[in-house]
Length: 232
Image (cartoon, rainbow, N blue to C red):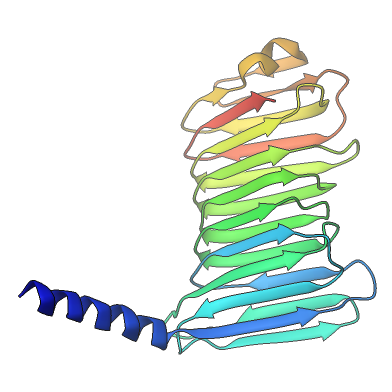
């Protein structure tokens, strides 16, 4: 019986592996590229590398159709909408200065080591931004946590918003910023940043103020979740 069960399990795994489809494209932009990636069901993982090319790979269900378009330095990769909601998991490598627009319906999103502009919009995703050094970041999630670990640029704007989820932000202790933090149903924990906020105003639902000399705009909004800030 055990041998039969093992054979059945191996057959199931093999069938699943055979049922996967693969998508792979490599683009060679002549300058700084903007990549727009729109997914429906599945993960998106983007990391920077030291090459000048952009490579997009995905493992997908057989029903998934992926369309791509290259116009000058604008690259668009889109999962075609389908009632079967087949899964597509993306693994993307880009030059650090690439601008990213990431859209997803459901599935976690992770971006590492990016220096370009970043825009993320999703319905149901946990979003992790790790070692980013972007001049602007705009993340809007309906359901999911947002984790940000990176630097803030002098004139940058950083807007992180989750309707149902926590927002966890880690920035260097020496970073100056103007803060607007709103948590409508939970608490706000700014750690030792709070004691160094000048012009601070704290109400029942939010905190505003300038840390050190101010500058970059850091706007954190959690409608049903916590806001946490940490120094590194």
